[in-house]
Length: 244
Image 1: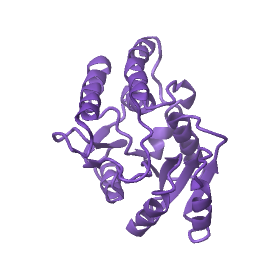
Image 2: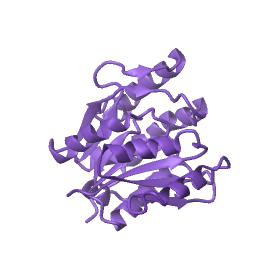
Image 3: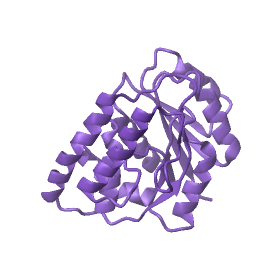
């Protein structure tokens, strides 16, 4: 049986964390790793209490503060590979990603041959609910801009709902990943594509959170978008080889 790990980074997610854990476990044989960045609202304490109920399925890594989305996921990826998981998912804690779609991302990798499955808001029209128009336009045209600059054949370049084959992650040199914010999502897809892995988009419906506070800001998004130019330039001087 394939071993599947869902990585969920958290900072101040006390309103959502218990529900997202319970719903995910009810859906199948997933394990969950929480990367917790010292939330002052008690998120870690909620997770630790639930570990008592799910001692072999729920795990937590606590960090000293807000160290960035990219470093959170890289920490999780390394942990997943050390513990020999076969498929590794990224998912937000706030239900903007529907845990029911985990099965569709897994199918894209396990049955359809994808090395990376991306839960895409934009591969089949625009499937985003409850966002203000300004944020939707920034996201949609930001992804179009990233495609133009990088040539990545992905409609939703900033998507954060994904499933990797473990073999894909093993081939990536994490030390060369420069972005620590939302630009990390772009850079990882770019690396997967440049290493000639297969990326498949799976259409999802993205719903804005109803509980808690969004971590997204114009500054974070702008940093990701403008960092794309540097990403493209650096790629010209790099030999793209998979790690063994």
